[in-house]
Image 1 (cartoon, rainbow, N blue to C red):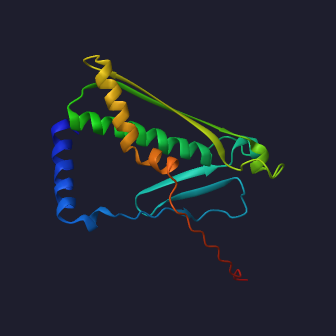
Image 2: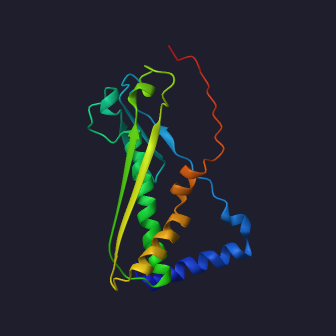
Length: 177
């Protein structure tokens, strides 16, 4: 998409939301998709008609490594959001990018996930987000400001830094015989 088309599209969205702020609140639903419940190492998730992702257990807990594990998907969400944010901020401010690369490195202690030590956190203990940009004009100050803006507007980074309220429900039913 050309920069001018992007700006035009975003400006129209912003104008619409200024007129009707209630439209700014969106709710997305991702669900697990039907798969063999006897396979403890693979699942499918997605949104009907939009996307589907196959996920496998991490090698460290018995998976075969053939599919991204949940931690990979979390890291991919952060990396993808960060790069999209860098690109959108650059496009909206007229900054010409020559290159963008984002790495996310996650560290976890598998003793938590395997139930070997209740004092060890089950999930990821540390994430490192590394973003590298090369601007066509090579201006390091513009690059610094771009990266600051990307940190400010990356919604997944914000979600991880400021966790949302999470509610959980669990229901059980009897299988048809």
